[in-house]
Image (cartoon, rainbow, N blue to C red):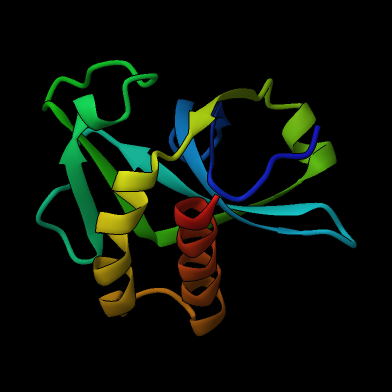
Length: 130
């Protein structure tokens, strides 16, 4: 299955050693490689971590901290084939109001490559205009 930028997807993550939520920021059509950032329940206050009240994305479970934290520094790339083995499940789309609030923060992110930051900003603009 191919996901779209702005999709929030739940799948197993070997780096974290558990099932986690991820935000798709880019899909390269020719190769079906997806780029994702983690959604965490902790990490607010760390560099390039965008935190919101977890109630702002109602399809996500409540976190123990009350926050959903977008981990911008860490971008994970998965092909459609790799994803299929991780039992992915589409949870929801990033809400427009969250995307709009995320834009000014994303413009200041310094820990992503220029390409990944551009993908993030493009995805946010697409979510807002949809």
